[in-house]
Length: 454
Image (cartoon, rainbow, N blue to C red; front, top):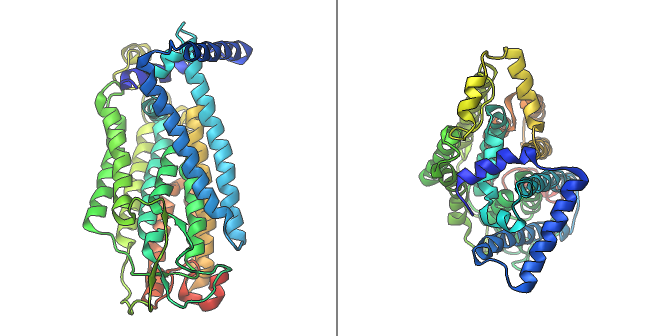
């Protein structure tokens, strides 16, 4: 894989790629030439490692996807929310990856249009960096892309606090939710969902995680009410700093790619610390319920921080975008100077707003971000209503009204603000449920046996 300079060139050249039958013919010929070079043993050595990395990427993606879907398909019971979560995961997979594959096709076509070969594309392309370049510039794209990254921080916090590593099975607990909760019953480990979000889509990983969580909250018990540790809080703060500096790093600089990889490590490493590295997790078997816990704030302060940081990011980017000069290429790219000299006047705020609203559909790569964000918003809508209906002991009507208000505000505030705000609000009744020895909301012990079949 190459430097981000190549990634920038690749992203900007994709628009000039051939389309239609001509592009298809070029690609077919390129694939045939590649197959011929492999059969003849003339495949260049320089392309072996890049080709292997591409194969491993898709193999890993398909493996974690199959593992997470297997957990959903093996569920012994069904409910309306679980059916919705499954449907959202399947729909998101189809829509989001149709856009991703379309972008990859245009990326390949851009290489073939400049008299290069498919082997050249394998050697020189860097899809990870190139994809981020495409959705970071111009700033209209970053307004939408940053929302998904901020939303990912909430997803990570939820997995850290409520993944299967937090649950235990009380010995002799019997049968619940259509499941026989024995030590042999397995669940997908927390970090697998995070990796699926990275290599697949957050909107695929999130509903599958929420579906598995709904299976845990009935027959199993949270060992203790999780509170954000200093280390996890630090990792969260650093991840937001990484998100904030991304558009200010030149795409041609190695720092751009380093920052992106560091951001993903900041998301993943804390999950590995608490969940371990096994692919599946069997909740611990304990002889009796844990001792009574005093209700506390739980994860509320961290969720509130994420909501506040996302809100600041959202509105600062909105104000800077609608009052900004015309869109420019990535900083450091070859066309940035000519672009700035060719624009003699700034567009009106209305023009900037229209450009902002059109940005989610500006390219196939950006469209994948848009669909990822939309399906994630739909998944949290189902989750928030379910939690409000089955979660609190008292004030259920107030909780439902609060969720309705948050859902209505989501198009304005974005899911990256609404979701952590709801989770911070939910911590009050969830921690109280754990203190009574329940499962922590959403079907946990707050409504007794009835909730175990939700």
